[in-house]
Image (cartoon, rainbow over all chains, first blue to last red; front, side, top):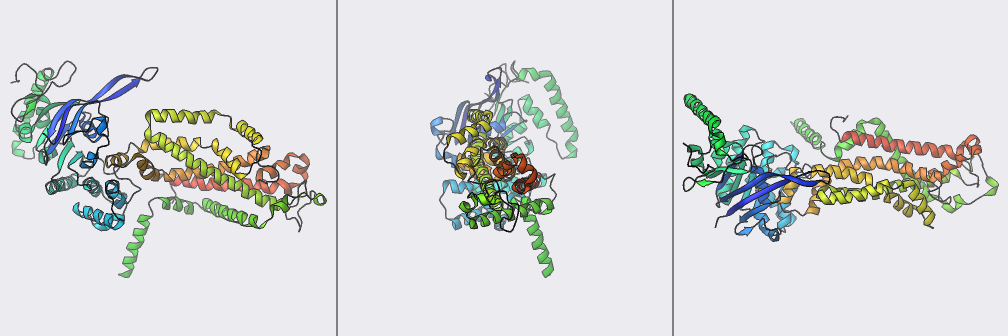
Length: 313
Length: 301
């Protein structure tokens, strides 16, 4: 059994309207998503804004209500109502996108990082301070900063505090919702490398949500690409980047800038080819509502949402 | 070298003072008018509470037919009223009563309003919808009429009963303000992060969100204090406040409804009128300064 298994997840938001404020329609933010994550690995979830990748992550941790589907974490279905109170919560933690709003401005670092500890572990005051100092050291902040307030730190440092809080309970799964999008490029690498380090150290599993393909390529073992609430392609990092099948993936891959000037012409040619194919064949890749088809196996590890009539090309 | 160290320390201190209550305090110190108002309030409050402890209420409210309408003299610093009662004593005790009511009502409406607003705002949706209809219900009740009816029904009433009646109809404003702010705050990542960390809801409301509303609460309650003092005086003036054996600023003022008193015996109503005016004005000055402090663009300090 997989470590984390998502089966046909749907998250719909109602649209209220009419005279009596009835539900007249719904926004299908996540519309039938299935994937599996193995322990100790990083699963990258990519897509443009509004594609439902963040909603998927938030639904797994319980911040968004699941309309239907299953979220099976170590054999427990987190979506089932009778499991709401289950203590699996402490094994699943989240790193938030915005390091500025994710830390309570009125709390000291000590209170912020110790919050999960206070909820799940009964520690004495001195033990708590010790634990928090340890955690801060682990994320590369000086333990003296425990009595400071969040506004006294830079964005990168704040994100580290957020990470310290997320790993305080030694969770098994961390949902990282665009953890570096709000950070300076120079700090991004720092935080990402640090995340990889603690992954090895604590045997963490990441669900890494991002719109930056370069970062996802660097971080992930497996990647799922989302578009309008559905998966268009899923596969190992190698599959996605060297053999993209769906036109949407191809365009994404083609859009990654190559730093080597020698490849510039080749890149340009590739981009033009993809653009041509996109204009010609766009309609074939989506059904009449503009949604992606169901995923089909291309190889052992590689799935793509291709139309029924054979593989394109 | 030593000086440099000192400098760093100072800077650190200045940096620290950026957060929380210090901003409010700095704004008041910068705004001289607010500072003077605050000192005035502090002086008046302490004097009134200390002096009223030394005065004998029964002595003051006892009718003395041989000293009716005495002008200010050595015996009666501010003269006497139509019952020969000492105005100065009534003024001190009246101010104490008015202030006590103002503080009590502000505090109670604050507690009820903040809790109510937090709960409605945090849960949102249907809960919000239902609870806000209760607020609407209280808001459309004609406050003055209900108070008059209560005064007529409740036979024996003093500061506690009067404050409770006022509180019952004055908690909605602060509840609405807190609710709307809570609706904003609960969407912020830190509130959601708390949820993923396993913090129970009531702890998120009162432990995480409440501290972020502190400046708003302080400002609203200060401005409410001014309004409540005015409201109490107004009700007493109309005769629906305290009975005559319990002096209040409004009662003293109501003697001025007698044209003779209004024209010829200024000592009865003038001090009370000035005091009400000054009290409300200074509370407001402080409140406005606090309000400015919560908005970084309007700050002076």
